Length: 197
Image (tube, rainbow, N blue to C red; front, side, top):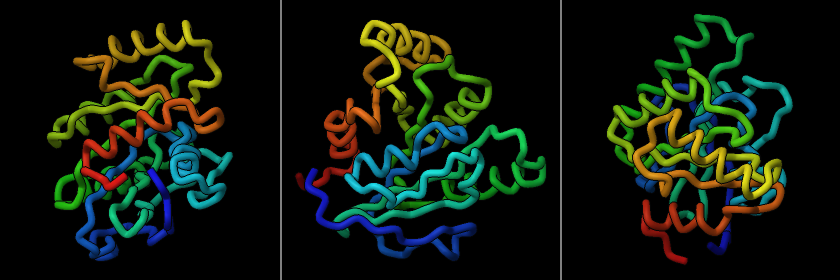
């Protein structure tokens, strides 16, 4: 994928703020600090387009990014961070539900999980939620560079079993550091929204 243009569009809290461009969108969900921003930066070959924070729970909005004036990425707020109040969590859930339910441009929601750990209760809930909205159930397993190839294979099996993923082909190992999985993930996106190479 040749990235000619990549820009941050808007941080939205409600649907009145969503970009009205009519472009296909792919959204990324995952718990706080799973590496969504790092992955977006790695995919777009930009260092700081998506702001990476060492502070979990920093993304509290829907962050829209436009690529080549062809499609948008949407970074959803990270979940499962203990310091976020129950009221904030409820607000977050409403915001996500409104987006997932009513956004006609949204073609796919992809869940990111940290490959080094067994998926937790929040990951399972989010995955079930994504699938309940009719999305396929793709998973990007981040931080793959922290594991050897044999550990990665074991981890993929654990993710598949824990999350009841119907096919290992729906799970993509990825590292924003080593760029492992970069081409495969772009191929996936191309199949979702039929991008021009």
